[in-house]
Amino acid sequence: MSSYLQRSHYRLDVYTILWYYTGFGRCDDDFTDRLSRLYSVLLFSIFVLIVSSVQFVGNPISCFTPASFTDAHITYTDFVCWISNTYFISMDKDIPEVNNSEQREGTHIIRFYQYVPFILMLQTLGFFLPGFFWRSGSPHFGVALQKYLDQLNTSRNSLSESPLYRQKLIRNVAARLDQYFRMRPRKIIPKLTIFYLFIKTTYVINIVIQLICLHYFMNFNFDIKDIIERFLIYSNT
Image (cartoon, helix red, strand yellow):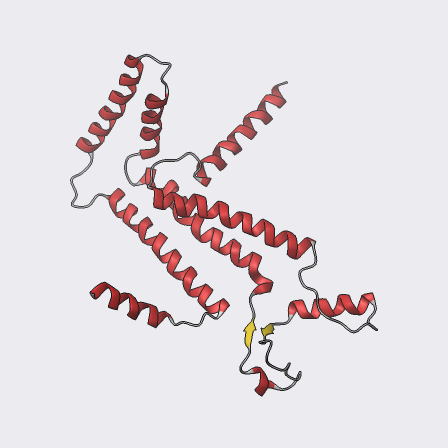
């Protein structure tokens, strides 16, 4: 009986840790932060599951083969097609020869499809890390915001409790915040503010790096320099 209770307590602790560090139920940031560290992570995780199931369980690619090919030949051909970079050819152009590199210069090489699940995993990690850093570091740089916000949410949602109980929770939070601001050393910019601005900058850097990486892998027909110049032109008008 005692070992069962210990295992149950262990499962509860693991569940609590995962719930805390994944950011579910937290409200110590704004909507844009949650859009990145929560909703984007959930969306990209779904994409990873879908793409990985097709790539590692199903048949990721099917190639046209001669009718004389056996099943082993078809399997080998599909495998070679999968690990080799493919290229896009318009319907109005002839298929170039295998060793004719001059005819392939005008084609659009596709070199990223084998790594789509891993790219999506890295994107998911990029959206997750800023929120993880904020949850891990914010209690060490100042007041524990999430703790007091949880108490305020409890006072708002506990309608069955008496008004005196809710007022007690609010006064407790106000007293602790007042004590914190009175006792902390006077500084021009508090550490928590600097850390919060750092996390905001990390969100922006993550988006910029992901756009640059997608531009490289997918060969978009635009240049980063052109985007910056157009942005500067629109901002000046």
